[in-house]
Image 1 (spheres, one colour):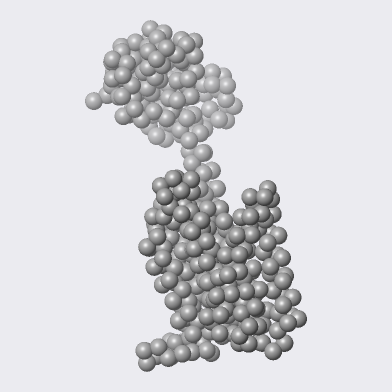
Image 2: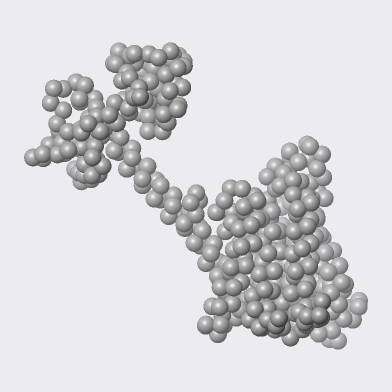
Length: 425
């Protein structure tokens, strides 16, 4: 089977995204995202020194040089932080100095070695099919073989050391307390980042590597609270960005690496806006629904208290607005919403609770008064229990209400002597 150049490009991008995404999750969780950026640039002097010593661009010396510089970068950053330099400043100073040193070495000391700085930075994933090697009787791009090996290496080490890496990511102090060598885990992660970065230099370039290390992992972080799912999502998001980015680049006739990075940013933006738990839009919608629910329940409670104390429980919108200190428009909106839900019925500008509304009002009154009684039994000041119940009544579940009822020994009246409605069957 012979794959097209486009297929090899997408496969290469997906492999790089997979190996970078796995490492990126641990960098994001440990708040070391910019350290990954720093390493991806700071390894350049190691590559240059390896090329100068060997006189060629063989993979093994470049890997060794990159690993040494990657670990050195992490060591320098930590040493600066221990000396009192802020973390972001330590990262910025270290990676710019080392990267600048590499640029100087490339431009001034490597006349006889063809290391293209622009290729290192931007890469050219469109050319991966030009350099092939025979694997099992098939011609496969060397970039595919290298990045598949890196993905396998990262996946194997993460699988073997998963528990240790997980504990170090979430609680380094606990990891040290249970006997895990946190420093070894840290420098192993930095070494993997270094090797993965240099392995992707020729095919995709350092900038795209940075994008694939950080953006898919950050996107996955917004979409789940479980590390296992985060790892899978990071790989999936990165692979999808590679495929979509390539198609966008083909359509717009632009840089493939740039298009993939842009799509990564687009996926992150979508997660930032619409993530079920962390998304800006999702949180805004949830807060709006909460405000509406609180307002609805406040009206039902107010109506339930009127039902207890008055022979004529009907009310007008103006009366509700004055009682709750709302604008008339706000009161009108709440009344209309409750009427649509079948909890209020209106006639000639007056509203009253329906049977369903009365049932819900009694349930809310029961929760409020049980909470007051529970606080009173705990010795809470009697003149404070009502305000406390007002804050909590909208968040009490049925199970919690039943538990309070048992704890208060099934009271019949609250501290003010008002009857506590019985529980519904």
